[in-house]
Every structure is written in C-alpha cells, then in structure tokens.
Length: 147
Image 1 (cartoon, helix red, strand yellow):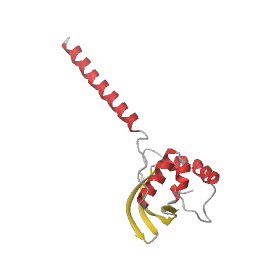
Image 2 (image 1 turned 120 degrees about the horizontal axis):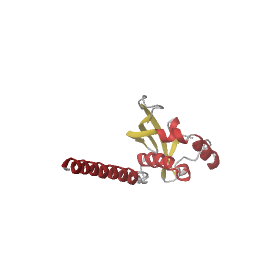
Image 3 (image 1 turned 30 degrees about the vertical axis):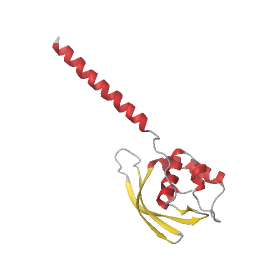
Image 4 (image 1 turned 90 degrees about the horizontal axis):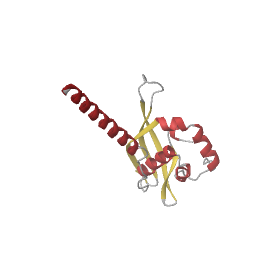
C-alpha cells in the first residue's frame, strides 16, 4: 500500500514538472519585442526580429533607399521563399564601428544543422549601415538575412 502511495506521489511530481515545462515553453514563444532603433545595433536586431516574425513591412523600412532597393513585393517574395533558412539563422552582435554617417556591425551568424548530428556553424560577418533621413538604414547584410 505504501509503495502505491509513493508511486502516485512520484507520478504527480513528474506530471507537475511536465505541465510547468509546457507552460514555460508556450509562454516564451514569440515573446521578443522590438527595441529602440536609434543605434546601428538596434536597427539590426529589429530587422532580424521583423524577419523572424514575418513583419516584412517593418523589415523593409530598415533598408536604405538606393538604386539597389527592390520594391516591397519583390522583397517580400524573396524572403518568403527563404523563410525556413531565415528561421534557422541566429545572430549575435559582436561589435559596432561608426564613422560619421556610416556604420559597420560585426555579427556572428550561425545556421542550425540540417540533421540532428550536424552542429550549428558560426561565421563572423558584417552588416553595413548609413545614417539616412535621420535614422540608421541597412545597406548590406549577410546573405542569409538579406533579400
């Protein structure tokens, strides 16, 4: 009889831990929010977050206006085609160098492995920004995060 009670207590504890883990998992999904975008780092962070959230209009707004900027429909189509690659890519901002109205942000980008035995590969890459019309705008990004 005491063994049955002990087993029930153990199963109850395991059940509570499982419920807590699931609750934590679902509460943390998409919990990131946009931050200030008055620095080159903030623009990069918000751009990548917008891509991950599928907010392509917001991401498009962070791109510098120049002769290479596609129209919004082309931008959105290209990113939707590569959505899985975007979701597999993570970034970490390493450093920023600002010279007048130009900035270079050094990033460590990693793409998750394609199967359970592959490790994520990290690369040091850079993003280029300019100060245009009163705010920082992206001129170039690593390929996996660019249109």
